[in-house]
Image (cartoon, rainbow, N blue to C red; front, side, top):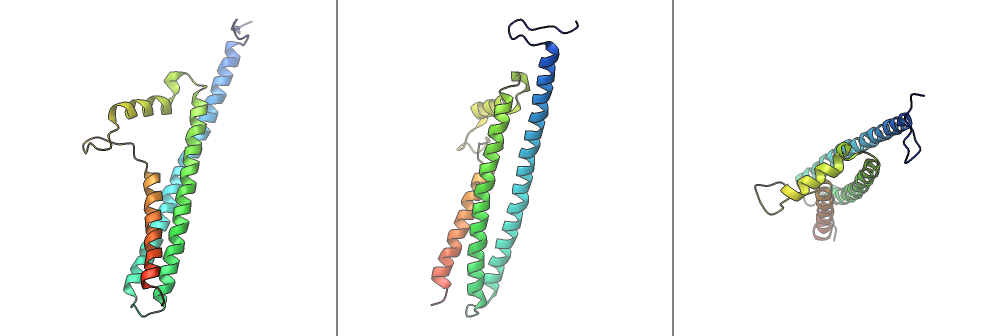
Length: 165
């Protein structure tokens, strides 16, 4: 018998190797899914940036007495709200995939854990929001959520100031 049985757990080295390989495979799938989520986030946020920018340009190009201006205000507001909601949804899924990856990493040896080792070391030694020469743990997704929310407020404010009546 070529298998060595682990006396504590009663499992063989061969079984442990198969389990490890399966965890690594699941880990790769989770990393890939997280990467796809990031790619989709960047793609859709670009669509929203362009759409809002084009509407904004149209709004300021149209004469103030043109009824199209009110349509552009409403369209800008609706697109901005959709952008805001999409940003929040993507952030939710990004956090979900990070949790999934960390759960899988708990089953891996410490030297195989990418998220735990890297993020803890960087956070402890380099995270400085107020120091202008150091990096900071600032989430691009959170900034996008905040920015899209502000743009939505600006469109709503424009409707009250510049809308009909």
